[in-house]
Length: 247
Ligand code: ADP
Ligand code: MG
Image 1 (cartoon, helix red, strand yellow):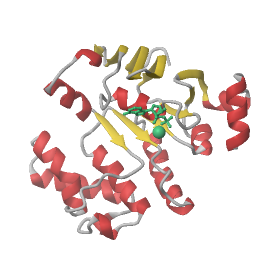
Image 2 (spheres, protein in one colour):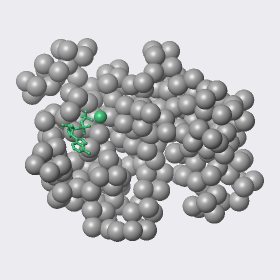
Image 3 (tube, helix red, strand yellow):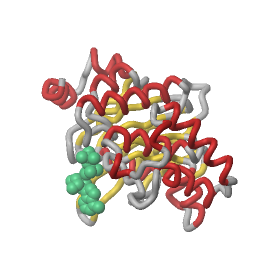
Image 4 (cartoon, helix red, strand yellow):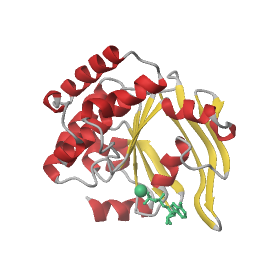
């Protein structure tokens, strides 16, 4: 991993909400092509961490180097530009309900990247085919199942050619069958070499698809190891008791 490009390097990241210390000094590096899962108990700071990475939250202190630039100190348009280089997928799909799938997919690349409409539409067609939803381009979000919405949300992020994809519990709102559809799209993305950071409760995904897993608990990284090793030889007592509950 050492010779791979460092996409995001996090140094002693802290986040407080008033007096509540949510992130208590997180340091880790995400390399190109890595697929990293973040697991841990609810309230441990996973979402806050992810939201700091793409500046939806302003960190209290520490550094986040994105491709070498500390993004904690940037302002205004530079923040938008930085976010555009990261795809983000949330538990609650956040599609535009008043736009059909094609429009959901093409609006940002056309407005922000000034991509010509024909090119944006061709790209959308190609990507929806890859997630098995070629026949849904004219559908509205309300006509889609949760699993279909989430696959469209993933495609929407991919339309912007992100350098890294951040996922916050992308399958938590889905039933098992739909979870499977979404996980297989994520697995295919991982196999294509996309750099991915995934907060998840899907332990099979963490163990089998991600290359590395972080266990985040109480605002600290308690364990950070290659996934297979973390699951076969958990060391921290808190990780051991967490895995006993969830596996
Ligand atoms: P996780 O995703 O691991 O469940 P979160 O990052 O959502 O954890 O939350 C960590 C802690 O931070 C929780 O105690 C939560 O209540 C608190 N928190 C999260 N966002 C805010 C906010 N905007 N204002 C105040 N407290 C927050
Ligand atoms: Mg969360």
